[in-house]
Length: 344
Image (cartoon, rainbow, N blue to C red):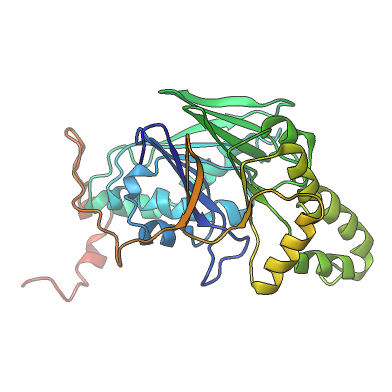
């Protein structure tokens, strides 16, 4: 890829993992080799493996919010880190939420706690280096965009997303005059208009027409909560395709990808028809492993093709990395002596 380009690969495009789609995750690689991951939803790690992307490159993770369809495979990436060649700390960015128990720091501390047995057992048999250290960057609530990463010419900003409660953000990446915005989960707000004007590539969530109908009919809520659920869901949760069309007309991105939706042929037609009521620009419907290259000549889209199995090669252990602790530190003699594989 060209040095001044941005490559975006959709590793998960739905809110529900299923055979044809993982939950949301986006891989971003710059022409200088820098790699960033936006969200790490359930099932997406399989697509990273399918594309042959070395796990040790996935060390800068930006979470839009803490709904489980956006971060669950991060637990796998973290826990398996040294087993897959990552010996450096995992850096994670995410919202603070205005309550220390609800923000990214609390969530990552919980991830460390829940993987304690896993981490200790791995350290007994392989070097782990600093793989289980976390470099947490908590994004405080703000009414404007916040520069959260600036290094080697790339800038990543976060701005508020309107998604049920405090503690959701969208992200923008700028590199060599090229730009990309990932909405995360959001309903329409002025923040998207202010931060995505004329963007090269916008990956924006859209509410499934079927899901919207279920909410309106009340089949997703208890009988006494129908009106409340309908009001909240249609106002502060996701973006209806008709509203997205009006939003795109005001933003005018070079290309828009409709994300966070489980798609079939009927849903495709419904989404496009609704958006076309207000917007005639370039729109695509997200599929897992779609690749977008952003460069001086615009945005090009293709489907990714990976090897049949990951071709990562050997995992070189950095010098001065402490060796494995050994089984004596984690396995009681009575349990060890029960092995049928021990020599006399």
